[in-house]
Structure formats: structure tokens, C-alpha cells
Length: 393
Image 1 (tube, rainbow, N blue to C red):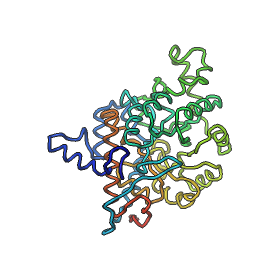
Image 2 (cartoon, helix red, strand yellow):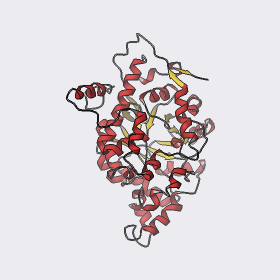
Image 3 (spheres, one colour):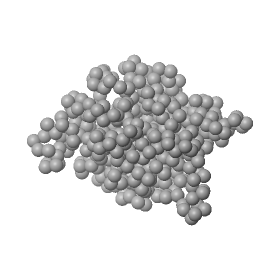
């Protein structure tokens, strides 16, 4: 219930805001999760905003993610001695003050110059684990330095060049990233009308490629370094990181070159979850990439219960896609997730105020989680199960 070093429960952020109001000080920007996106839109150009907010095709999967949360309602229980709560957990050997991680979101410099560096600092300040995207605007090493003694995992967009892949994995391991999160669902970009209408793709403009462009194995294949010939570097990057779907058999390559836990992100089907168990990985993320990849796909929250029931005793089941509030986190945990990845909201916070903006949004979500959990009659996430929810048919 308490953030490391803060000495206060997460829910105390509410009291802090009210007390500061006595001196005429308001929150730096909205605490309303619905208003947050609109506020960020007012601060960003259409290209960056829609790159973060947009979805695949008609946006049906983005809507489905939110509708799945809305169909499920928390059933509060009374007189449960929930005054004191403990939100802490351990996931794959990583101790966490709450079952919340900062999801791997790429090209964060399009919303704030500090990008992933600001996110890394905010995560360390709050004691949360951040997951760094391969599509980072800053290098593996620079983000690790910004994160300091904080907790960090590394997300891999699996390159087709084995030497580059091994080099990136080695750099991540040497820089203190403890868990490898392999994204399976984005080997090719989906049809994204908002990005297409703006002709906006950061990577071909040289943004979000700091990790490969700084990698010695990648640079060895170039006639000139990216600083001297950006177009040639981009032409090498495109076929290396996009356009090829891998197979289950190829996971052995990652196990050979990564000696820590491996998590597969993008699992939506029970059979794929069982294959992940058979493949010997340690975790999965039930995710549809926030609705950005397959239009008309199943909502992640609808996929979660069956997957958790099938494999939850054999590996760690994490969740993302559509999470906006503390109540959303309670629902995902009740349906079997061990922890939840928070994505777009903290990026909107980044757009508002860099490190401080991320901190405000994440503290708000954690406070909401803490208060909602207690008011619903639960003292820890471990007490949650499906009985905590009612579902509309």
C-alpha cells in the first residue's frame, strides 16, 4: 500500500491534493482519466497524438477493450477490515510496491523531448518497474542510467538478424534489465488510418531507432554510420525489424541467449497460452496491443479469464490493453492477472510535463487502485477473484 521511500499509502495522494488546495494549488493537470486524453490532444500535433491514441482499422478493438471493462462491475463488500491494505507483490523475482508496471511504449520523444528518460526517472522515483521498448527514442544504456537503481525490464521487437538480436540482448542484460518481454503481435504494422492520413511514421524519420542505430552489430552492416547516412540506416532497419512472423520453434534462440525470465506479449488464445507453457517461458501478457494491431479482435479482458484458468498455475499471467483506472486494475486482477501494464495514460502524462507528468498520472492511478480496493472490501490484490465482480450479459 506504501510507495518505497514515501512513507505514505498510495491513496494519500488524494489528501495531498486536497491539502494543497488550501493554499490555492491545483493538480498540475486533470486527474480525470477520461479528460486526460483530450487534454493531451490539445498539447500535441495530430501526428504524435494519433500515433499514441489511434488504433487499427475502424478502432473496433480499442472500443472493445473499454467495453469489456464496462460490462464488468465491482461488487463492494462491507465490514471487511480493509482499513490497512498491502498492494505489494513479486513478479518473476521482481519486487513491486503494487501490481502495476509501465508498459513498453516506443518513440516517447514525439510527445516530450526527454521521452523514455523521463519515464525511467519517474518509475524509479515511484519504485515501479518500467519496460523499455526496442522502439525507444534513447539507447538502452542511457535509459538504464536515468533509471538508476530502479527496476527495469526490456521489451524486444525481434530483429531478423541473429547477430543484432544477440547484441541487443547482451546490452540489455549488461544494463540491468532483468526480464525479457517479447512482443509477438507487431511483426508488421497494422492498417492505422489516423497515422496513414497524416503520413506519420516516426521510424522512417529517424525517431524511435536509437537502440538499433547505436548497436555495434547493426552499425557493422552499414557502409557509413547512421549519423552520416540516415536513409541507408533506415533502409537496413525496415526489413530487419518488420515483415517476418516468427515461429514457436524459434523461441529456443531467445532462451539460448537470455538467461533470465522470458515473457511473451500479445497472447489472446488459450491454445497459444498453453504453447507458451510448453515452450518453457516464464510469463505471458494477455494483450491486443491496445487495439493497434488487429481490428475487430477480442478484447483482452474477455480473453483473460480463460487464459488465467488454463495456465495461471504454470506461469505468470500479466495483462494490458484498455487500462485507464484503478477500478480497471482491480477487475483485471480479479479475473486472474498477476499484474497489469499501464500504457497510454502515463504517456499522456509525459506529454503534459515530462517526468512530473508521468509521476502525477501514475500516482493518480495508484491512489485510485488503493482506494477502490479498500472501499470494495479487500486488503490486498491476493484476495481478489471472480466473485468480486458482476458481469452484464
